[in-house]
Image (cartoon, one colour):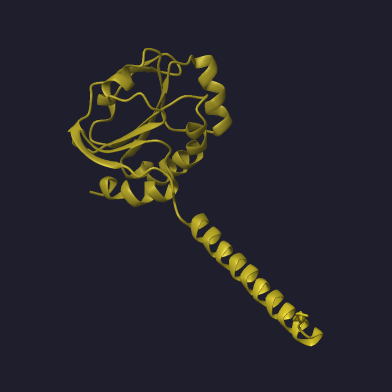
Length: 190
């Protein structure tokens, strides 16, 4: 007759406790690593980074919310951030408070932000401007002229034009405060 091996109850419970302890340590390490990666991810800026470019700013003549003719030429000698957007665009909505704060901070240093709405009427755009308390110039582009001139079909799209009329930075996608502060002040303060 064959003898069946049975561990002693003391040995069985000792092994069980060691196993539970190892699983507990593994769970704690997992949770600690997860929290560290969550903190790192929340402090990292995943928004769009601008591309450095070098081309002449286009001639662009449009109308503002009150129907007056406006032109990029009206702002020659200033640093201009042109932002192409629409009220229905979620990333456009998300970046507007950031753009407003940046504009307020740098407008006295020869900086202007021009938000060019794509294909919407004043009746649609004016309530949006009021809702967000926008104080920078808002222009209307019912025919997508700005998109053609800047050669884009994406919203939001933004372009930084230096004081000499050269487009120096281009963003396709939303802009964060940290990336605005990292890339644009050097051009404003040149």
